Length: 260
Ligand code: 13P
Image (tube, rainbow, N blue to C red; front, side, top):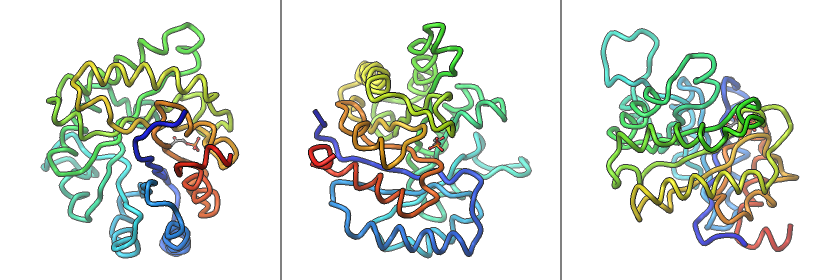
């Protein structure tokens, strides 16, 4: 049974793209998105230098854009960092925070991720807060403990009203870029757990979009998106091909689960 919340599909380009290929990809996504039912929201999170390009090519279309990270600081002597306010200057709707690649390669703790979510909200940018367990953590039965602690760290620094304005993405580390997606049942189980944690923060927090990420493809998207607590996807590799990304967006449309 699918739920009544509108679906959201977000592409995470990671560190891919150049001006010329981006233009082809963005134009393809804009064109294809016109045919999507209105109940599907679509966005792409691009590397910081391409925010201006996304703004220029997506402005006025139904495809929103965002960044893949923001600094914990508002401004200052932090060479190489990009502030949430700078991202907001380019009309970014979203900023991913706490992606597992940042946690793993840049040592980001859940407290750092929480501060980034705060900076995004202050700048009027919706943070997409990523949580997820490693394979070892899953196999040792620690999935709930790990993702629960990652989410709680963010909820702890937000008011209920602020928490109601975030997006959460469950991305099991073992499913990212491996071609091995979580099964729909595995994903739904964790999403239901996260939903309960959100609901405990306040009634208005219970319905924040909960995205699944990790090897989502046109072939498995409809089955994932029909789960009761899966409100869409955070798409890596497949977001770099307009056709695949649009097929995943189409799978999120109401009724796609009946056809699929
Ligand atoms: P893949 O879709 O390439 O597995 O990546 C998922 C992801 O990390 C999105 O943020």
